[in-house]
Length: 499
Image 1 (cartoon, rainbow, N blue to C red):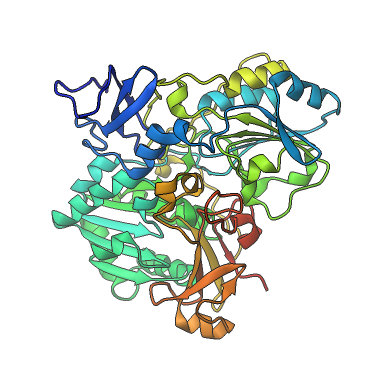
Image 2 (tube, rainbow, N blue to C red):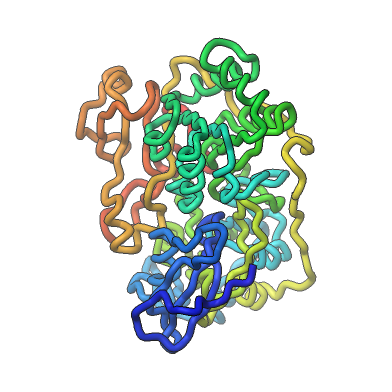
């Protein structure tokens, strides 16, 4: 859909140009109208004719599109590390730095703001390309969010879309208001809990047994739910990136494939999901590479970084990855280039519109430093989950009695803590644990777990420790603890408590 400015301006601010585009912060790809004065964005609104957002734009989209270039923390110059300090430099010095050391094996790690265009040029450099997201060898969703409102049954597994695909949540609420039966199964109470017909707090072990009971029609209320699925055409199951980064990954995928094949159930995986064939971080051996190129903040997934390793970071901010690299190259945001998102859970074929100029691109920079040539087209999977060959296997058996740490979605993602007003939504990182589990572990209220303050609450399941992923040590306001230190399991969000 080609969006055009509205006949009547939505902004009361002074501007001399209107540009319509799509926000690529998440998979919703909400349309917007940017009101510009010369080259500066002075106001931004969700586009009223966009079918995804219907005129709304979330706080993350407003911040990223409207505020990024105005932040004092934004990296706008190439920086080189000399004797543990960064100094302003240029692309020639980055090239010279790498020429002084023979590079035998290069790895690329692509984060949230990576694009398909980045992937194409980096694939010419090395086959060892990894992502902090999740690769699925089929379409990540069978139905777009704006059709969720027509569903009669919705099952939500360990997901809170308001923290990832923000505007998609409205369509779940619309479905419930129209009488849909919403079953919310999660390790903690979340936004969906307020509207759910049934809420179930479950740890990973309990969740696996529950999914088995649904498949077998065993015990109530799971027998009744299976009957609903058998007799109701308009059914949907929503699963977050969190469960796909857990020991239950392949079991959950198999469960959804069964529902899709047997009952025609629609499905949607949400979060940083791609159907472009790419390796995942859980499979990397970081120590085996003498050069690591990061697009966005990707190294926060690791507890320890190898010494004597060259690292280049394409960064928006001086985050953990940037300050642990030898060279920092400014990362252009989607509003500063024409680009296709790498992470695209709803498989929209959306491209960004260039609103502002930026002196660097990943393609030009990499091509200049390494003199790449040739063309590598990405492999994109568009088949349905039921038509996919899926190797159903266990990453690791979940066991009764194990305590699991879940590092999950929260209102503010890592990049959000560089924006003062987004940081204000979640000023402090906390560990959430219920009273029974706290007593079992000898943890007290307001004590520390992994250096994070503990809050004892009845809103999380037994044998579960929940921590927000949206923090790391390099944030400018109140810093936190990065995921790599909490789990020490790159590429995962759920893992058993260290013994």
